[in-house]
Length: 397
Image 1 (cartoon, rainbow, N blue to C red):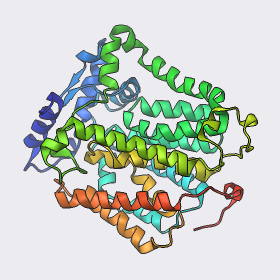
Image 2: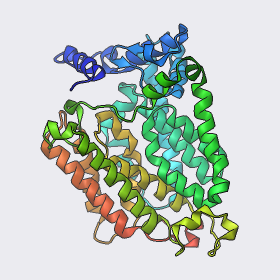
Image 3: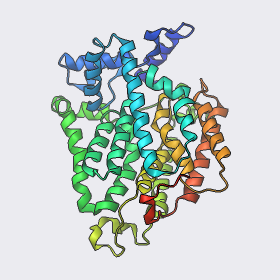
Image 4: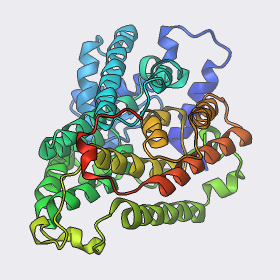
């Protein structure tokens, strides 16, 4: 069954089919975002009463504050050209943060960065033309990872929580972050960092929680939203009835959690002790803990997110930025001899082609899953414990 949000978005798209696009037509959800934050500016703090052209407000409070700033910076949301210029700067900031991450890992050959910068029409469109909130969440996420790499764990967790407050997809990185916190600090030491994440969510959402806590939590953290089959990029080859069936959703969740557990047990945890040893204080473990290397941090976080992408109930076109900038690392970080440079580039190209096929087809969706399976396989076969010297190694791949 089509939800109200999906029906309104479908009507929006149908109204624009066959038209020549102007600057104003390139946005999709921008006017809805502006209407939603305008409701907050006008004094409405009940999330169930905040609406836009494409449906209700379904993002946490951090989204409201950030897009409220954009509302004032763009003449109450009317200057779309200015908004696109701001998002162009956001795109450049994202590339800078991603390059800083890759610089510290020293795993990806330089020629691959051409693909990241120049070869993705879809990503350029999502950032600079469409004005979605996904790029805002991801730039905060990459800032968080840079802080973690600098051993600023408190600030990194704060920035991670801020990214979650813009859009919940960032939670796909959360299992990896939890594993890293337990590895680095043990259970008791990780609690303050987790408290930062939770405390920031409460602080940002406080005005809405005081007004209607159930309405805020059910709207902004709704994990059971139904997606419209028309927009799916990854499951087009399935019958629509199966795509919408709850048993299919539960099977994907079970597969997601199972693979996360397998990676945590067999790939991320490499000390030889039981994984329960992570709950102890690091000084009391049998195997003395080593400082986490950049590759351990990045590999764990990127893999955690990628597993979630592989088993998502649906991927829409703007979701490509959830993992686009992590793909080169996932493909080149592990020494799989059977996957040559040419084959890796082929995988990147097929993924790009799948995301640029509109509307998606059974073939494009199947190709996307095949590419994801290749990456998962090489991660499973190639991820091995990192040597101590990796942290200081500056060798190119």
